Amino acid sequence: MLKSMTGFSRYENQNGDLTCKVEIRSVNNRFIDVNTRLPKSLAPLELPLKKMVKSKCARGSFDIIITIEKNGDSEANLEVAPNLPLASEYLNAFKKIQEGLGLKGEIDINTILSQRDVVKPELEKVEDASEEIVFQTVDKTLTDLVKMREDEGKNLEKDILNKISSIEALGKSISTKQSITIQQFQDKLKEKIQTLTTGIEIDPARIAQESALLADRCDVTEELVRLESHLDQFNKLVSSHEPQGRKLEFLTQEINREVNTMGSKTIDLEVSKAVIEMKSCLEKIREQLANIE
Image (spheres, rainbow, N blue to C red):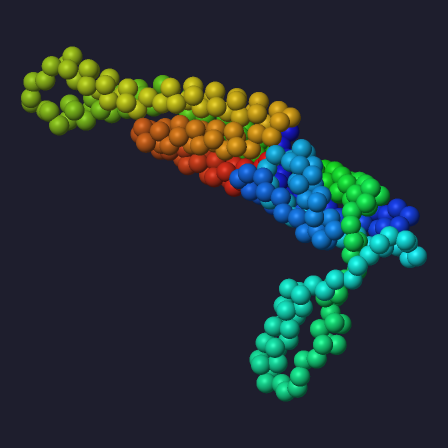
């Protein structure tokens, strides 16, 4: 079962004193990378939160945004802290607008303070209750995210397997034509040699030997056998419950290698068309696998 690396989930949870909001988004990545945006008070939870993500996902780039707020008359200890980097961004943006439009006037502090999150109350420290609600909320958000990745993976899997089936069918069509194609090649080669050597005595055994040698170079039987083996292995990996994205990417390269070899060997127009179609399918599979966990 394939899983996508793309997903998004948001969840809000609360207990008697606090409300916790968590947002997680993920995109494709060769490895796993987890970035967190946490209130200062939750900084000690960064490493455990990253471990939580890695316990449920094998690949992808994750952004986790967590906010935690006091409910009503809650007795939770808060501190009001300025967000100086954000305030500076707002100030720079206002100055650019002023310069761009040729406006005059001063940008006062009230304009800056009226912007969202420039001054924000935060928990002074992480207590057991706040730590518990954070982990509960992240766990639920992550579960929803994984479900979304699985659903998207099912759609990608269906499309990928359809293309694998097309490659299998094309390989069988080449296998059916293989013996006919080689015989046609030998007949045409003999005919051409006889035309070019009219009136010249040539050893028939030598002609037969050379035509057989050249025909053997056009034989793609070995490539077809390896192709069938690779496709069978591909289907088995897809049905596995473990993340197989990297293995499938490597296997796709091996399949492409066999298809390229067949293309370079063949002397039949229909086989060449089949090879081109297989390469087209493989290119689309590679694009889809770039987003598979």
